Each structure stands twice: as structure tokens, then as C-alpha cells.
Image (cartoon, rainbow, N blue to C red; front, side, top):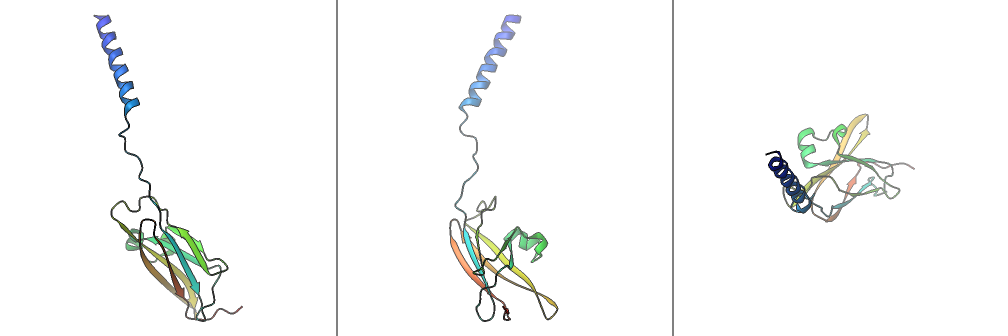
Length: 141
């Protein structure tokens, strides 16, 4: 009886190992070609503005928290050309559809008042887009 039980356990053990080795149907993480965005910040005379923080929001974050910079999914700073160039490689995008909306927001003070401006862009996988936010004043050198 002991031999039969040991033989059954050994057979089950070998079959279990064989099933694990041959299991190629396990779900793999989906790979995707992330979209790329260029956002340009300029003053009212179209001069590029360097060192501006641009807050990047996925649509679901924006819809939940609005334009609250504390909840931004990512922050990028403009370069000497007044641009951010970002690969939007967020986990989980393009899982529920063929497009994804992103919001790009800046915050600044004007006449002692908090101001914000934003643009919203819809991307398909691998798409490259650009847009410009123009400040309503001139930046003095």
C-alpha cells in the first residue's frame, strides 16, 4: 500500500512539474509603443520660456482631482527652447481603448493671483503630437 501511495505521489509530482515547464500560455504583459509629446511654453511675444514646470495628468487623474498639481502623474521642466519632450510611457495606458487623453498644465502668478493654463491632447499608440501654451505677458530678460 505504501508503495502505491508513493508511486501515485511521485507520478503527480512529475506531472505537475511537466505542466509548469510547458505552460507558455501564461499572460504576458502587453507591450506598446508609447506616444511622445512636445509642449512649448512661450510668452506673449512668442519668446520661449525656460524652467517652467509642466504638470502632466492622465485623464483619469484629471477627472478625479482636477488641475491640482499635487496629483500630477508626472512633472517636466521646460528646456532652453521652452519645451518639454516627454515619452508618455505610463503603465496601463491603451488597455481600455485605442486612445488616451492627457492634460498638460502650468501654474503661475499674475498680479498676485494664482493662474493656470492647460492643453488637452488625445493620443493613439505611438503617436507624436505638439502644442503651445502662450503666457499672457512678456518675460523680461
